[in-house]
Image (cartoon, rainbow, N blue to C red; front, side, top):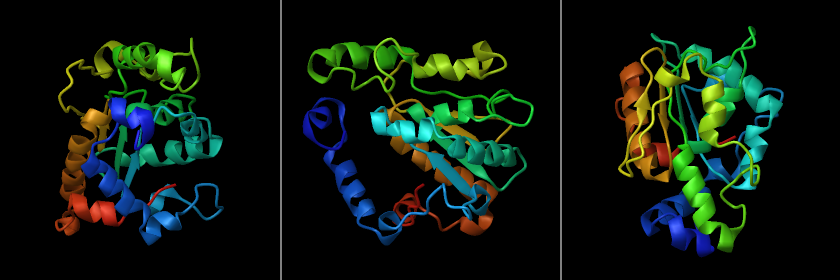
Length: 221
């Protein structure tokens, strides 16, 4: 969604593209830590932010047993009071829904969350299908919507899954965990800002942290 036809239809604006290009040129982005390394451990981080993405490449995160294991270990550490923070948006909520604790339940089983609404996913898929095929369906036509799979992981989806079909920026904060979630690209900037605020709250020593600083200090899996 940074270039080509998809960018022109529903993609990033120029400011976001410029920020992305700056980020990808940074040393941290050029030499990322890898989640399959034997010495990699999410517990070394105060914040884990799982980005969204509907492209087929997203499946390297969604389907990875290793990523699932890391998230299953990290997410419980965000239970309040805690200095650990988690945020996820769009398809990024799926690996959390699929990460299982020792009792076989999803780490989100008692959490409050949102994710990509089924209505958004279906409209994007059917409107763009003549031009883009199954681009907006990560697992292809006929596969479950993100909302459907996330709800399956929740103990009480009617009360735990929060939804809004309004296009304005929106996010959800869980009352039990230091966990924030968003729905789609329109929520991304607000979610990032609120995540910074939450980190500042649980880590007062980071009061100088800003959104720009997070961009410069980007670390990815």
